[in-house]
Length: 553
Image (cartoon, rainbow, N blue to C red; front, side):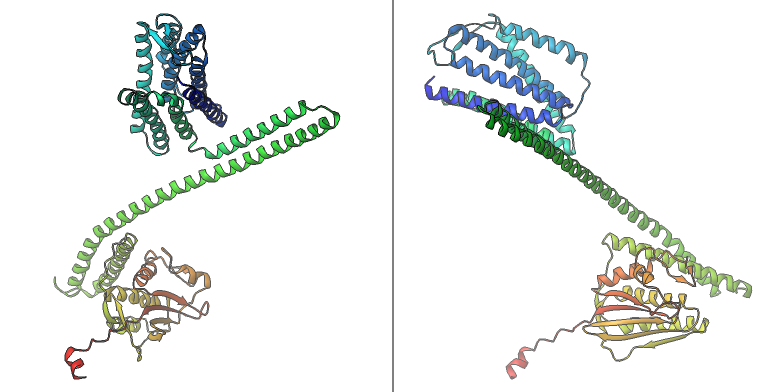
């Protein structure tokens, strides 16, 4: 081998040994009790032994020495194949229960092939053309046993790795993916550069970089192990740098030649020792806190995912249940109406009041089911709106006569002040009617006596509908909570149990879908309250002048 190629081999080999040993040390220190870390550390030690044997087998000029180191290369190759298999078998677990075959028979086969590799039954000697070149071994039948064992361990490791990748998921799958990339990269480089290049291009130049091909696997394997423990790497790096500084200062102290240098050396070493310990402790504390925060963040993310899934299941259940309830309730309503109208014969007077109460209770259930359906649709984004230019006052007009009857039955005043406001808006007639119905119905429900007033006014570019009552009023806390889900009002300290407290919440969602908003104001307890709906006024587009009109101009 030419001198420049020899230099490349030595340089690349030495660099690979240093990098691999450092990565092995970092991974081992990161988790000393992990079986994966322990086997990875052993893998790097054997790999370093393989690379050193390979370099020395090239550098040595004496025949016996060359043959000795070449045989040690074969020994380390057997150990590498075995350790590779065990590493894949364990990865990424911290511990693993091995079978009797893996504990006894497999190591026995490896040891037997190791001793076989040191005998003349694998390589009986070397053919050396150039003392500084790569020797050619004289192969004997034992090489087939060697090859079967090494390839069996290697291929079984690759097979196990692929199976683990297919069957894993989440974080483990990501770790195995990196390990698989490193494995494919290493064997791909061997195949292309150490076989195809030699056969097709007739060059052995790339063989000098064999240590780098192996380093591909080591680097990816180290990253796969440390990928989800990167905070711990910070501790390891701090420890290594601190230890290096201590060693340098200790060497300086031991090399001191006079008293002055000894005193300075002792002071520097003592100070570095104390500061290093404090630094490592602070980094450990920081890492511990960050790992706790990361764990809490992961737990919170999982909890949020579960909550979303449960919320979707709840919405689906409500939707299905509401649909199933709505049909029989509507049928009940129809039959009660027919009975009250005398379709099935004259109703006795003593049954009129109970039938009316049944009808009212049934109507309340229908409204409750409607609220549940609307809530389910809006939360799933499936609420259908039919927007069109309408006048908000016209929506109120459809409710006035009904509530005049309610006011008369409760001996209250009901006032509707439409005024001169330009109340043209873009909205869904029925959905807005639902909001106004809710406002007025609540006003009568919570006002035992007095007046309920509905009015319209313009406010900038918006139309504002107000429903005022002389009822019990609201505190500031009640005002803030009123438009929340399942929030119900109080009357004289008693919580209303009719309904689920969804009406105002659904009304708020409908108003927001119209680009508007809901609100409430109250001077305080016993002073009434005013609920209001604000919606942007609709601006009619100006008609485009006709062609005939333009020509006349």
